Amino acid sequence: MKKYRSSPLYVAAYGVLALLYAVFLASVAVKYGINVNFFILALLVVPVLLRLVALLKRKVVVSDEGIEIRDLFKSGFVKWSEIESVGFSSRRRTFLFIVTKERDGYLIDDSVENFRSLLEEIEKRVDREKLPDNWKEIVAGYKQSYGGLILVVLAIFVIGYVVLKSLSG
Image 1 (cartoon, helix red, strand yellow):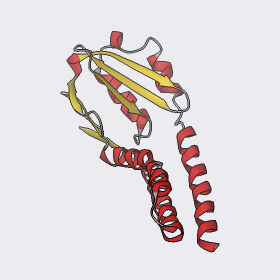
Image 2 (image 1 turned 135 degrees about the vertical axis):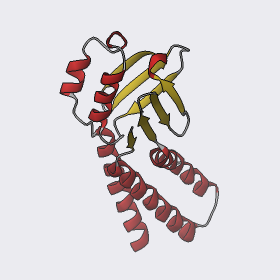
Image 3 (image 1 turned 180 degrees about the horizontal axis):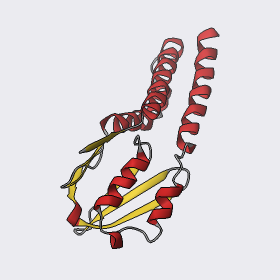
Image 4 (image 1 turned 30 degrees about the vertical axis):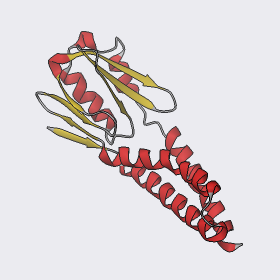
């Protein structure tokens, strides 16, 4: 049995971003009071918090019986024999799609630690005809995508700058 969780790098980045947002909101509340504008700014934090919670909750467990996927919005266990197809998409982030015979779908992105190992485990257990034709090339050529993480780091710098300016002036 192999367990995969969210990469600590992603969790840390989103944690720092959420913390900076909280400091920013606190400084806005102290400086301008809590009003409608404050609540509008607070809404901007919701997606960051949801992503952080999703990263903390995520867990993928690969066993001889099947694959268990725990995520914020969709969790479940799929037996290897119930998998209809496996898909793969790589753009700014890399995604693995698992579709069951009941047309249920599960999505795993590469913010999961040891994603290549997860791909290799799936290759060992899923019938070849259910994998993409170029699966071997996908696994061999897989490179961790850092596009999403770079955007979060940029947001950290921007929010950090705004927080420093709001606290100093």
